[in-house]
Image (cartoon, rainbow, N blue to C red):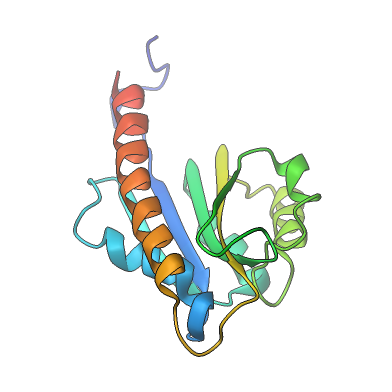
Length: 164
C-alpha cells in the first residue's frame, strides 16, 4: 500500500514507551522497564519515565502514532505477572491501572475528549500484589526486564511492518 502523502509531508512514525511510577519500591516497575531499554531501542522509539504524571500524561501523546504505557499494578495476581491491555474498553474492568493522580481510565478518557489519543495505545501492567514501598522486589524487577526485551522485539516488528 502506498502512502498518499508526498514524501516531504510524511512525519516519521514515532513509538513512545512511557514508564509510569514513583521512586518508591515496586512502584518503580515502569521506570525499571525504561532503564532496561536504554540504548537498546531503535531510532523512532522514544522511551521516557514519568513520575506520577496525572492528567499531564495526555501531553506525552502529542505527535505520536503509537504509545505503550507501562505501570505497576496492585492486586492483579502474583508479583511479576505481566498484564497487557490493548482494548480501552477493557481498561474499565482493570481499575487498578493508575497514573497516580488521576486514574488511567479517566486520563485516557480526557485524551479521547481532547482528541489527543494516539492511533494505537497499549497498556502493560506489572503485577506487584500488595506493593512493597521500600524495595523493588526481584520478581517485579525480573518481569520488568522480560517486558523490556519483549518491547524491543515488538517495536522492531511494528517498525518493519510500517516501512513495508
